[in-house]
Length: 271
Image 1: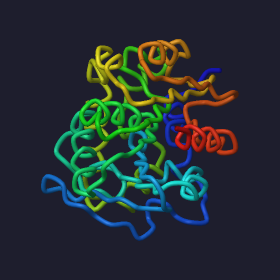
Image 2: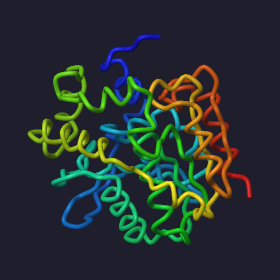
Image 3: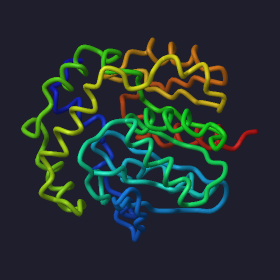
């Protein structure tokens, strides 16, 4: 299937413009101050804490189809990464910077043991968080993530290399300016994201064998960005990994909530 760059990118954040009875990501959340930046988050449900980390240029709304079901079983803490959603902008972006923010949020919220559900960029950040505070992470869902831009399929790598505000649908600009406390930072946000995506290494392969937390590697069998064999390579390097390939599923792995939500609940619930 031949896909345009715009279509490929829309597959990252298909739920960004989806309809939901509750407007997740704009539902009376709170701000927490980290390193002189205000980070927006929302909480749902009760039980053991699960942090939700969204995809690239996305927001809490990436989890529109996930929050209603999972909040019946867990306490969900959904975070808008700095510069994303309703969080305030920071000067530059990298996966390590975003992971450091999550580590500090975990500390500020006085969380002891947590699980993480990460999607795309959020999966990358989640693994880095797990490496930084291994004693605090029970389980992590590594959803549709990769180790570097060079793991991408040719179409995906080309999209990253040619990324600019001009290729994005107007809905992305509108959504950003509606939510962001820094609406004039749109172009800066786009180019900071591109710079982060083109960093040579996102996750060092050497850290995977050292991760003792249980990791569910979750991928769609039709992901247009990441080859299926890359998910298998990641799984093989994890000492406590599980692998799940969702059928007839693209990059937006949580869009098929009937399948994905049951898998997540089962993985996060079992001892």
